[in-house]
Length: 295
Image (cartoon, rainbow, N blue to C red):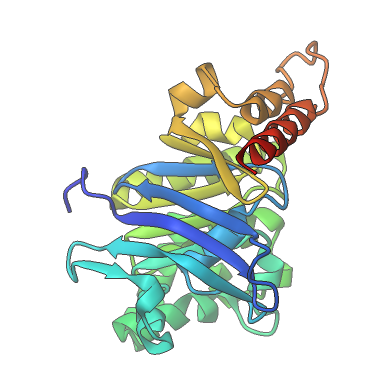
């Protein structure tokens, strides 16, 4: 696939509760992802990052709905498809096969009564029709690829460490070699050493498979390590977007500047600063004045 042709384009995505369509939780979000590149969506908890990702997969809860926008997906084979227009059966063929997602907490995503090998194999059987020795060989290969001994295929999730469970989730997500990988804060619950290993692994897999990656995080340290493009979200809206160099070295929005000011330095000498929302009060005042002038 042409590396300059967007793999995914979000155009004016808005999400609201079904019983309150005017109360938007995500507001007119637009960005794109290229093959072999990583777009990081960064912001505080509650900024709409995960909701945006779930809308791509058509996995929003029944209490929410997409009120506007398009999710244009181009895998290089089927042409451009608007995922918001596909029915459940069509989306099931895409999930896992062409678009995969690593969720934030593996213990809530893995079934505790099934072995990890069985769970990795489900998508291989569903999408690729693998069975028997061919299936077992592929499962062993995937575990080896993410740094887990092949004999752990018969282990249950509670028999693995947090880092190993996250690696299993990665193995599940890349099993069918998807075009796009969505990683929703996959390193949040891990210690720093394991986090570095997971980030390195994801970056290697992205390069090897030429995957596009959407990485959701609140950590600018992670952004600095893996991002090509950065999207900053605040209260459901994009407040700044650009290349990693542009956003980290020359932030334009007060919220982006405030987030960067919260990042501690390696030596621990930089005082931590809480986010100052004074700019938001100024923005509200300006909006009210404009509304009064228009009235």
